Image (cartoon, rainbow, N blue to C red; front, side, top):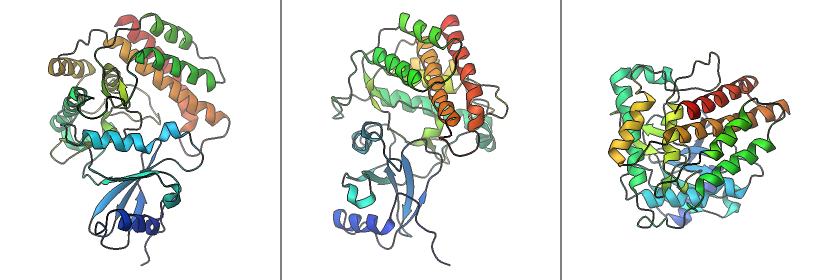
Length: 341
């Protein structure tokens, strides 16, 4: 039986020649690669020589903005966090020579674990194990935000000053550039967020897209690795918590292409996650409603962008026809969260 053809974007023979040059003895035989499904932006591949296993990350195929798919940044933050309490894969190498695979890429160690993406996927664990995994995700976030950026060599990893204001302006511009219809309440939500901008705590390393399916959970229900660091920076740590709280809010969206783990039996309520974070980190989370409302706004903008591309015929695959229905739901949740606190 002949081996499967290599996936687009990764030539195993060229990768092996590069690894043999840069890390002699690491690879023991011909490499096989497969694309790991589920990534939303950068491409992720599992690679093996039959004995060892590694993971390769590279930007999407085609022309992309270098700043949005910066392999050096991802590699840098994962490497910097390696000695910390934050579980991340060990890094093997960074290659910025586009002659090798057609784009910059990096290689990291393979970590065993499951990225739980839906309540149905969590169901076999049962309530107690599901609860343990989600609480472990909160504890890992506390560990991440406890990392001293300077000590980790990340003092210049971002611009914390004015972080929230820039984020709000950035996503407002993104909305203006990717909408082709009226969205009742979205300007009201954006303006209300601007009027109520909280003062940020001391800056921390921020993941930027922190949720359960961006982590690998081991058979012992512990967080084995946090993945997908493409949006990481130095900024307001409560943006990570607000996003996690948003993703932990159950939504009744029958037939939705957006999966959620929040409805799984045993999944802690969003309020308990916030309380656990506050107790373990010592941070004041009294303004959390703003951060959660901002997360609803941000996701509404992202979904509207997907819907806009769908209306232009620029998306491929199932489920895109339903995305547009979700945007008003996210806007309404943002407004309600901000008003009710």
